[in-house]
Length: 401
View 1 (cartoon, rainbow, N blue to C red):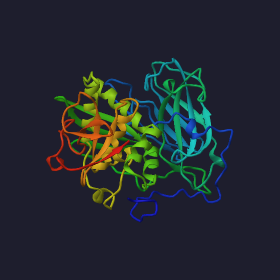
View 2: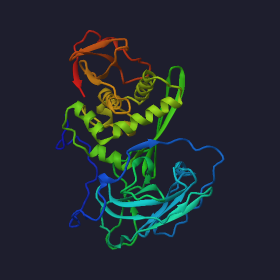
View 3: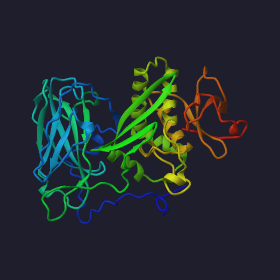
View 4: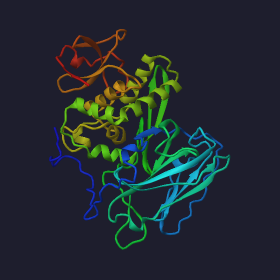
């Protein structure tokens, strides 16, 4: 299994801190105290919404012009002096008529908080409005990647007091750098950033701060499409992690960091919007979602034969082998939103998922006093309990997660 020292392991750009490493400022918020998310739904805006405002550039700022951000609250422009956020009514839907913005300047990807600021309170009216939040990056670290992250808060709340149910993570910016001797910022994308991809079932579009993913599938005779944002900094954090761990530990990582539950809640919401009313129907929707991800061998996608992916890599890369999709599905089913007992099932040269349930029928494996129905994760059309003929009767390793 690849480890940090393997030459085949994908590497991102190392953060060149030089002599600019700073101790954590105790007066600033810790990254883990911010209600950051790794992914969220990307519903299609309704027709007839307000047209976007113009995004003028003065030559020293970066502007956001992606089609996706039209008619949505988003960062319109940002520079060494701060950023301007275009706020649309009910985009995102808030629970307060008065709002304000909290913005953090962070080391990329999602590292130490360097500076933070809060906008003035504003009325969330029926019109589009631009809110400017000032920063002074004249003393910010040079030659290393930075990012802005933006949250929408109720007008009567502070970031360290408000609960996540009243906070909306609006977006993050692409990474940027302030180079020595310059008083402007420049984009600094990762060499690992994947390009746009459009297939028959799967689409990926890089936009400011995120990857817009669309996945088409079919459940219980009904066609569906799921659209989501996976934030670039969270994705980069995922592929920077070490690979020297057992497969079950990949599931544990996603459960601990919360990514599994974020995706699980998203899939439950999508399942319900597509007519799923029972727990079993929602599980079937999650299975169909994972099966709809494109399949490819490790040797094609990563350059060697055994590169196990974390969840955000599987979603963004869009080409996975059996262990990648099995880990993804097991983590989703084990997440609190689903709260199922799942295992990884490893027949010779393959991997699938097992789910425990007294009423689930089909091909089963016995493990530690429970019986788990097999789930194939690599291609659409496999129902819970179906197993490829090649693995029927073969002994399999069972990995508790």
